[in-house]
Image (cartoon, rainbow over all chains, first blue to last red; front, side, top):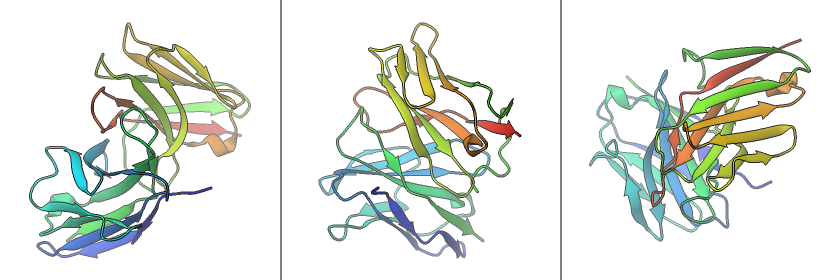
Length: 114
Length: 112
């Protein structure tokens, strides 16, 4: 069964460093998403991406964040200058079509900013 | 896993009993709802979905009920098994948006 994959599973970084989280969405899916879950909090939407551009973003997704689809299979989330409060589980998701369709989630990357 | 440390409501059920997990959603205009299961160390796994033009949908051992009047969603698991132990989240998709809005989650513990 096709699934979303994410690398790395864990990442530890120093405050102020840049990190890139990687995702491989399900191959026939066209819509891609990033969510995060800070420990003890809900899963929160960050951004959605379609046709090589951001289709929607949340207030959390400020200028420190960017997304990219560098090739036909990968979808990345970059945090330019990490802050302590960026420590969270980051989930990538993908869906075949747009709103009102099932989003399938990857296993997540646990990011720890020291 | 991601659930460690979360102060979640917990539902404990005996193996073989039925489980009912409840969720209140926020946006009365939301038209698509999903239940996810999250096991320790894994991402949310799709269980079942329902659209706002329905009030009930059944899957294999699971049933989702939607009450739009009170913005309430429930997940019923029949004959609960040890493998059902996990955190369960509901999510809503407001119309015209790409995002899902997640609930806080409920931890289901199945007692042998």
